[in-house]
Amino acid sequence: MSSKLTSYSEIVRTIRVRACPVCDSAEQISEGQAIWPAGWRCASCGESVPIVDGVPSYALAVANTLTGFDPSAFDELVEHEAGHYWFEPRNSLLLGLANKIFPSADHYLEIGCGTGFVLDRFAGARRWSSVTGSELHPAGLKHARVRLGDRAAFVQMDARRIPARDAFDLVGAYDVLEHVEDDRAVISAVHSALAPGGGFIASVPQHPFLWSAADDLGHHIRRYCRGELESRLVSAGFEIVTSTSFATVIMPLMIASRLGRRKARMEDLIRREFALPSVLNTALKAVLSVEVAATLSFGLPWPFGGSRVVVARKGEQRAPRSSSTADASPSPREIGDNLDDPILLNDVEREMKRKPDQTRRNIVSDAHIAANTAKLSPGR
Ligand SMILES: [Zn+2]
Image 1 (cartoon, rainbow, N blue to C red):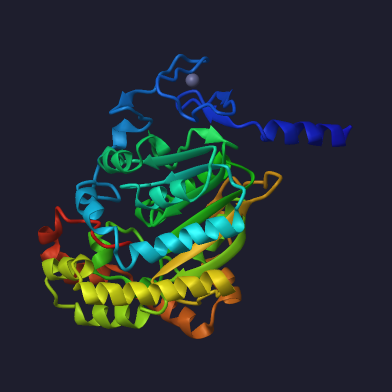
Image 2 (cartoon, helix red, strand yellow):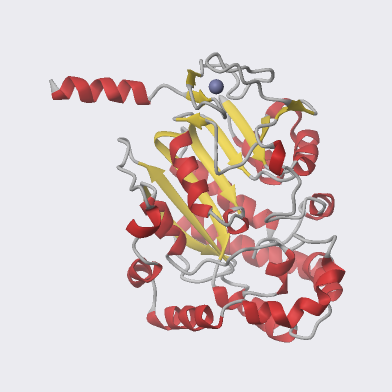
């Protein structure tokens, strides 16, 4: 009897579902059908989802707000991503991990796709049944739609409330979680939106002691301690497949530049972040590309670096989710103890005690210069 019930629930779980943003009633997504079709209306409550510039828009109330991101930065970003020493190798790493670990993933969602720079690489890399780019800010989607055309579907939504369940085989969030106060809500929503066995690839800026004006510019809420993201994923029911750092080989340069930047003007900072001399850009890109190749070829779990990239998998059977993930989660320190060398952990703890507030005070007088150029920093 109980085995029959189990297999029945297994069958129910594999049905891909879109959810009404108002009444949460579920509706099956048929194969070949758009996940969030334009002009959709809930059969239960009659709610319809508005279309703005051709994009189903689930969270217009918070669109283009300055919370966690400055949408005006997309115009700047789109100019600089192609060929950039940091964005290009990061693309190779993310796509390499997806191809290696989830080669048969079929329905793909990117959260916070911005201008579509990563989505473009993913969409062109293999034959997907569906590719969807989601973004809170229509200002980013404007660029993404031009870049990808009909090779992807787009949706405007709040990633803390993804209106779908068991709908995707792979979800990516690349330098997005650090912009969200309640990152646990996003992780939990991704878990629900994934089919059993589905994958989640997330990259975040790492090491609080690397906090700099670039993080303020980028509206970052945090840089993650080592083990912190893994801990939150496990609390939400994910198992960790692999975890590594990115931008390890240039970390000495990052530290040196941060020491040198204490008194730098914000506009100089911005110039240095993006308008690198082309020789330097080429050199850094080559170095990071070698690092990425080593990560993908030998599975090197770089212990430290500007970013942390974690690959997680949703269990085949739904893991019990605690009502309060905050209480149930192991501390970063507990997980970090398994992953880390003690020297680096001490550094992190020291920086956590100092808190980024001090850094913020140091640069507050320059903040106005940056008002319209936030998020110029590649999230590191
Ligand atoms: Zn409804």
